[in-house]
Image 1 (cartoon, rainbow, N blue to C red):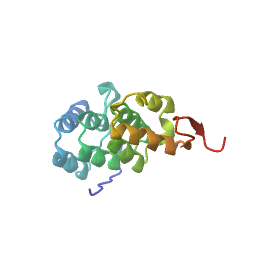
Image 2: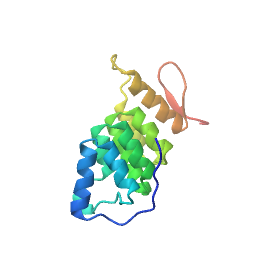
Image 3: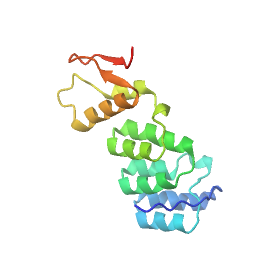
Image 4: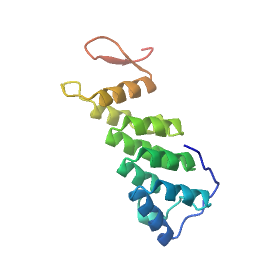
Length: 154
């Protein structure tokens, strides 16, 4: 995916922001790409209480999330998106967000642990991968076969 990074930070008008959010909600990837390449901002007014990145995460459209996060300037929004992706248990989106600068340290590790249920025999591969990946990122290591975990070096 080509990155279209333009340094545009002014906040959109409410009407423009609603148009952009609708494009994201309906998965109009090329229209959003054209929006960005035309030099339009991704910054929506706070009164709308959502962002294009959050809407894209809600739709689960990987390519749209990739486009938006690669053009997102706000570290806070990237970190909030990471927390949101974690709540959806979408390892692919979590990895994408981290690779584009979302800080794994911004996510409360306790929330990640609550998503993991070692007693669930139907535990999906992606949920296990998510747990092991987050454990690795936090410097945890598997201590024994009883699923006991300890902080590395302790």
